[in-house]
Image (cartoon, rainbow, N blue to C red; front, side, top):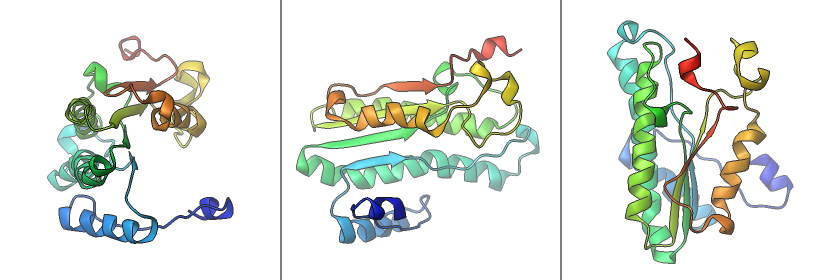
Amino acid sequence: AEEVRERGGTAVTAQADITDPDAVDELFDTVEAEVGSVDILVNNVGDFDARHWSDIEWESWRNVVETTFYGTVLCSRRALPAMRDQGWGRIVNLGFADSDRMHAHPVNFPYFVAKTGVLMFTRMLAADTSDDGITVNAVSPFAVSNTEAGVEDFPRGRPAGFEDVAAPLRFFLSDAAAYVSGENVAVDGGRLPEFDA
């Protein structure tokens, strides 16, 4: 937000429990009071638990699914009425590179389940809003710059930089993508999980 303000833009910061519909309403009310209706929504939130699925306590399992999947659904649902009223909107959801391939692993499994749900929701919502001037797409990185373990084994010898993830996101937000909806771009350097075995 500080960088936006430095560049002459208007920005507001707000925090909420995005698993609580009332808190999501309050979050949007706060933002709308400061900057007007939300016409661009990037759902980039969620937790993960990188342990074997059988070792994850139920509370943590639920937290991963609720923040990652339910948070995306609740924020999108709250943003849609204003987008429909103005006949224009962009929603970009953050997925995970292997989720569209139904790739699963015993470690961090709730995250894979939640991100697969995010991609299914993206496709459904794109179809549901196809006559409303709204596009809904996903950008799905494998691992990003703050990843530390196993980097030498990644495609191209590095994780995705934040600019690598931002490039398709900016495209989806642009007028050039007005007819592109329901799509997912994997930002994974060409990774094939079946070769990881």
